Amino acid sequence: MIMINIHARLAIDFISWWHSSMREIGLDELPVGSSSIIRSILGQGRQARELLTLGLVPGVAVQVLRRAFGGDPLEVSAGGHPLCLRREQSRRVRVTTVSAAS
Image (tube, rainbow, N blue to C red; front, top):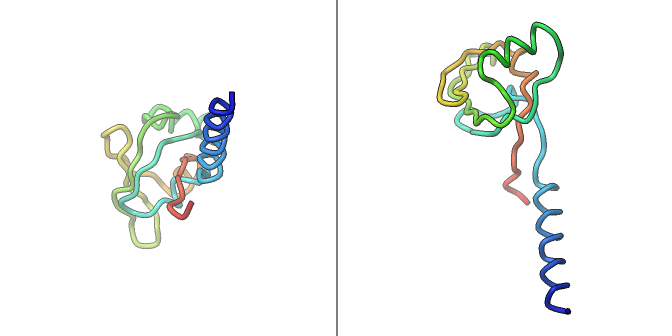
């Protein structure tokens, strides 16, 4: 009985740590060369539909390839396909990061 409680407590501690180390940011905030997973697309209507049509759907891996001077546009690879996004578009794409400090 005690052993089961210890394992359950370890599992709960791990899940708490995992959730506390994850945070959601905009794709425009990722540094060049870093990768993440798309969590959601903000907005409604035509603008959100265009991003979804480009393949920027939740669960897809995305990597920032290059950023123009001033940060606009942003070249990314989503699902292995290169795309260029304006800053306003990339802000709507929410990705999950895991902080290295935790």
